[in-house]
Length: 173
Image (cartoon, rainbow, N blue to C red; front, side):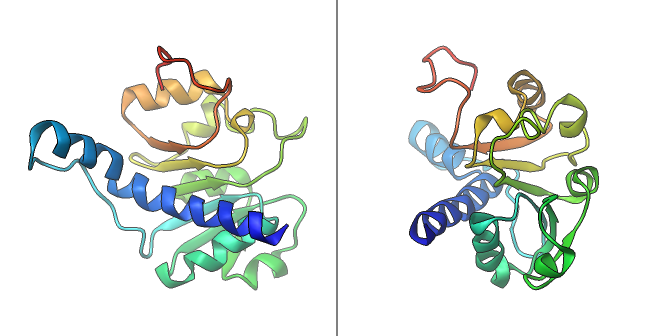
């Protein structure tokens, strides 16, 4: 219910902030090298954010993003533009969302239609340094396509779900 949706939504926001500011890397770097240089860190304020799926969790994420004044885009074939606009967002097609969002957060359910919704060509639309947050289902994203993008260093990801759990110790992620 709502309590679970709120917990996932808050965690999604935490992942956005951690991913944009590269907090896990900074902690590791501090442990290993003492004070060092941070990698590119980005603010969330006024960034273009795309939400894929606008059910209870997606809507709560939109509310939590309010103070950051995002340029908010939403892809969800099952909601009306009025519903999205009431949360300060704009209902768009998936390609538009991916091309124009610096942060993309996944909140869609798993169906035959959403399986590997983000494949190689979809991920290629993301801007350089974009952050993909997945607290929904791993299967929404094609694993090898995402690994290719991450290994190239072009985009970042903050993932809370994996294709095979638990993640094997030698898994590239």
